[in-house]
Length: 114
Image (cartoon, rainbow, N blue to C red; front, side, top):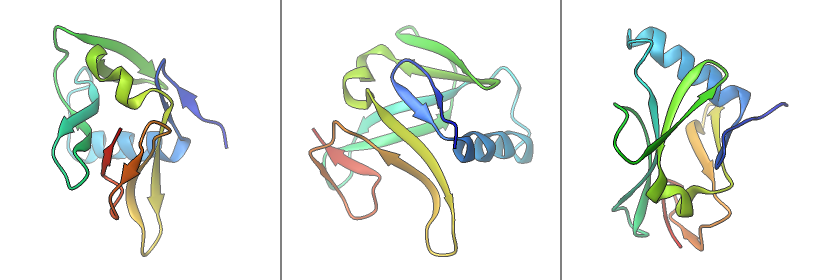
């Protein structure tokens, strides 16, 4: 499996395919970037952020296999080296985050602490 990487975050081919499918199904504008980052909350303190958004003042922009991706430079510390994957199984379906910076993660895998 070949992974596509931006400076801080790696996307697997299945994650890229799922994101492109979402763009088509939701009829998203082609120039609207995907935001990768973190926000406060969740049972472990920080929650992963993966959503379509506008580019902000502190954002770096990347092209990942035709997807525009933005990352707030202030979030780099929390996501550096993280892999975003998409699981399409019957029991485990959705985006997963493998973060080498996380000291603890919650049971659902969307919240972590550093």
